[in-house]
Image (cartoon, rainbow, N blue to C red; front, top):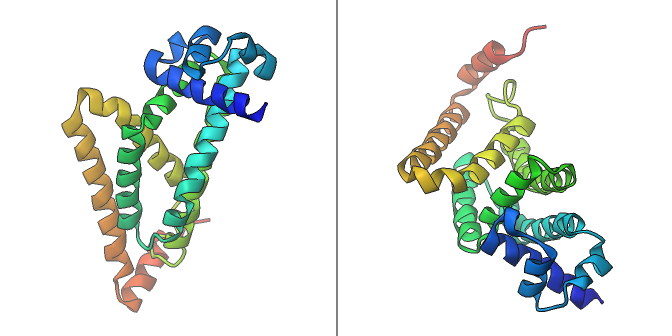
Length: 207
């Protein structure tokens, strides 16, 4: 039973890669999984519920595979370098395209929107944990928003899949802009004690 469920989950992801979210059905999923389409409804009830489970389980597996690498990041530039590497790996495997398709389908499907948001949240949580660790003692800490920044980074890397298709140079420029931001934070971190105190005082939120 567990094996059949996994076949259906894998089949759903394969169907998205081949047909796009609009072309996913019990028939296309079953064909990709090599099983009878009635098993979609037996195991998951609806195609939407299957897609929700596929989105959740696939993302959990991908995040778990990269967790140790996130823990090894020691600077914002390293985080961006890791982001580039992960984006390329996930793009080649078709996983970024799957997420982009799920996002497209989520615009009109509340059930899919919920599961896709939860999947993005798994990536965002990993990135936010790294940012909090890196920015904790930085002079930029008073104005840093690790939670918001983590979401911005996640959105940027997901959006690159669509952006690269129409403007590869623009996508490259966007990543370079993030690199320069990381360099700026490193410069702030290298300031002397007096300059750091002055900067912290100027950046401290006013009440």
